[in-house]
Length: 196
Image (cartoon, rainbow, N blue to C red; front, top):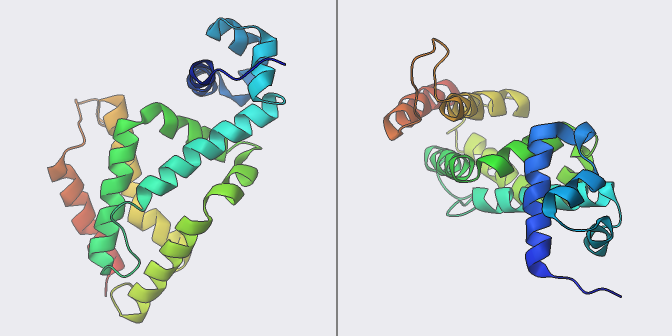
């Protein structure tokens, strides 16, 4: 039986993420991955039982890293403004520092693997955010609104601005960079929309 080589395993994961982002789930294949990594297909099966196992495990790992980063310095006991600001800071930091992983988890969330991946990774995060939002509503720091409306207002503009940053240009084609000033301007408008 062949043994696991952690360096090879990391190379396989990184290359798989790159290929998923560039080619999508449908264009992704184990033979092509092996070729891109310079390993035999048999080597891949040391780490993963099949293509589905590989995609699911990579999605879970990226997702866990993402949601763990969202909780850094965050507490459900924070005031609504401070907690949401920490969420914005954590989300923008992760997205800017790990663009490939961010693109990959977004792709996988909206694929047939999405439910299976999310069901394994969001429990602690969901619990903490539910407590945070419930507490903010009880303390009258947040308007009582449905989750979907909350999420779209709280994070929609942040993710739109981060996408413009990734593209390097605004909707009008002018150069664009996500700055602290831009973040503060958008965040202040979000707080006005969500608070009594």
